[in-house]
Length: 273
Image (cartoon, rainbow, N blue to C red; front, side, top):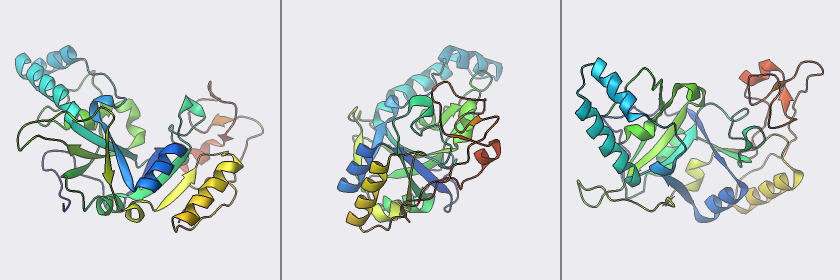
């Protein structure tokens, strides 16, 4: 189905915006073998909990009737079982909190695409799909918009705003106007693999066996592979965790680089080009 923007939700970033998705080794193998992207049911996403009553009070201050706010949040909450999404990030790959190490994430691999590439990858899907930029708000002082069922999947706490997350969205319906709960395990959507994958990076300090595996996969799927070593600068004096802004990190004892490197995108070379 040809891609169209949704008129009621935030638009997608510019076509040339670079976006990243973070995967485990098993997830990468499944993606390459099946040529299908996994969409997670929205009610299964890790997200900031919204205190509805606090939102009601904020709405009252703005002149919004309390019952209207409650009904809107109730409907949006129920419909999350019919919304599916694939999460991407435009914040870059080198220092993202999704990397394994700091934060305890399981991801070891990041695949690179663009908004235009994601459009092309899903252009033949029979379902209607949308791409939208996540909005970051302070739920303690702002009322989340309630005019569309996609909004809960498109709003996160402002403290996470550095992620600059972008989401591919799908609403499963049983007809034109009836929402149909989908499988809790998510949905696999067939894609054009080469339109979507523009590059792959390994997490810093990845094991040699993983680099060898990725190189083998690149050859098998007709992709070129650059297996050059990563050059990470280590400070002799003051060290700053490459995934956090404070000195050191409570969950790891490696991967330290200068503060200036936190704003660069050159510490890890792409493996697939």
